[in-house]
Image 1: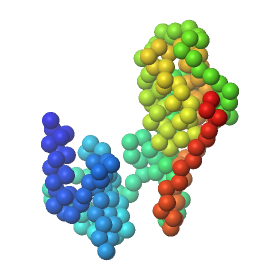
Image 2: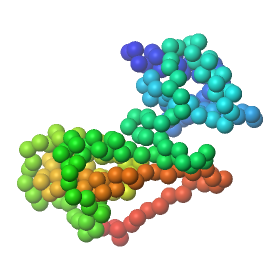
Image 3: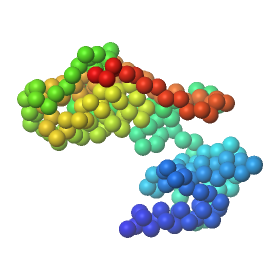
Image 4: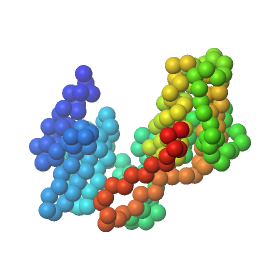
Length: 213
């Protein structure tokens, strides 16, 4: 119950300060006025605070210090396995290089030969083609870890989506698919998600269709 009680207290503290939590994600609090916009993202007892008015942010941090025992870690550079790099005042890069290296070491794929693609273009996985693997728990664990990697590496999302459909009874053919994804990540370890400031607030979606295959 302690984490829930802590979150309820934090929620009350922020709402008293004029913040509102978003309906789509309860851990994101927003305060928008004519003078500023401030956003707070919460994960357990870790907070990310950002906005366009540094004075109000500093005032908010002082206010939180009075309510909680918190430690200001300064500018964001690493959060939940995601490295945040700045190339300028407007561009940031989100990378999970260290997290991916940990997965490669865990699966003993850190010395594997890289692949240029995460999946063969005409690959078709089946629940009937192949032999059962001995370590099902490891398969599920690696799939879960790779699903987290898709936060900054959407290029493996399609492959991981396909492979995650066989967690009930994974076969050696599916494990080979995971190894190919890991080889691809090994060769593209420095890839990251580039986010830059823009005036266009329209959300654009892309679909890579495979002709209903």
